[in-house]
Image 1 (cartoon, rainbow, N blue to C red):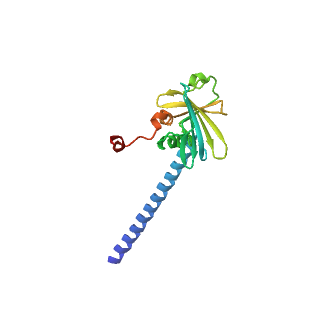
Image 2: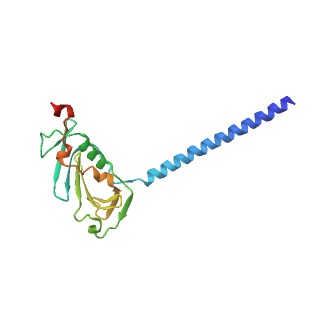
Length: 184
């Protein structure tokens, strides 16, 4: 009788272990499929290499140029300005790997998207000499319309946070004195 119970329990344990193994396998497979679907749904706008310089211009025609020298960004309009490096780093990083939530094709009227007179024009220069220009148009909800030069019939929508990196003047980007230094 005891042997029979041990055999039954052993068989039951083996069935449960096999069931668990099957569930783990199916969950891993479903996770891989979901990740592949998410990666496929990502719309890459830019996928650039190392940015060596960039400039941007606002609708008000303020234009700022930044160049990397010895791993430090300088503003070519004021080379002596001591910049907080987080500002130009954020701009270079944001625009070198932009993703969009939508891609609109066969566009007729750029003025409908604010791209005839864009709010911002960003030009990025890669280490290898490749130049990429991005125009940012109207805000639509929580996204901006965006167009890459050379893709005249395509407009993307990108998160508003992408353009927020451009909302700082040169004065805003200057390295701030610490409170201790200003008290002396």
